[in-house]
Length: 158
Image (cartoon, rainbow, N blue to C red; front, side, top):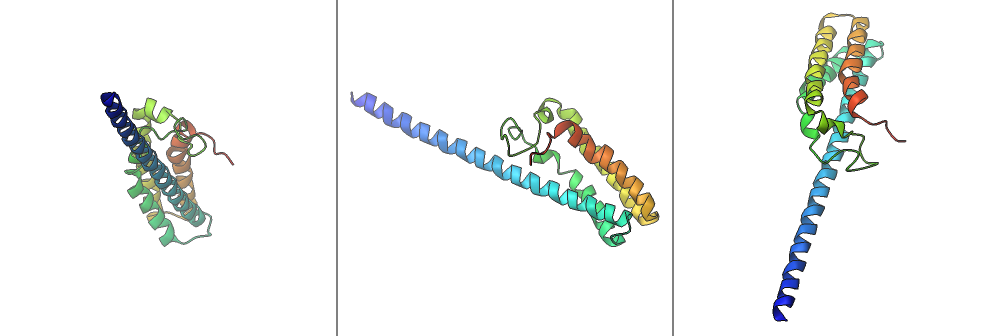
């Protein structure tokens, strides 16, 4: 009988440790979701600054900084999407579709394209007119941001 009691106590401790580990992983993933959302909001602010300049409502220096930020950020995107952080894992908390992990090669190609398009925007800001920046920014929106959002992001819930 003492063995059963000792086994039960050990099992309870193991279960408690496993529960704490699971809670810790969930907290880590929740932190990743928050970091990812903040990152995407910063990218949105960057694209707004570029589009404002293209429309004559912003300044060239802010647009240039925003384009350079997008270039720098592009290499960080994939790391913000670890397994277990999709809509299936966190319904109502993220819009990342499970397809990110089932079509990983296509997903990983998007930030590479985004960087190229952001570089084109950056160069256009340096040498072109605001209208030219608007055309480059439209391409960035459609084939950079839109390439990911169209395939890998579920519609936003309001």
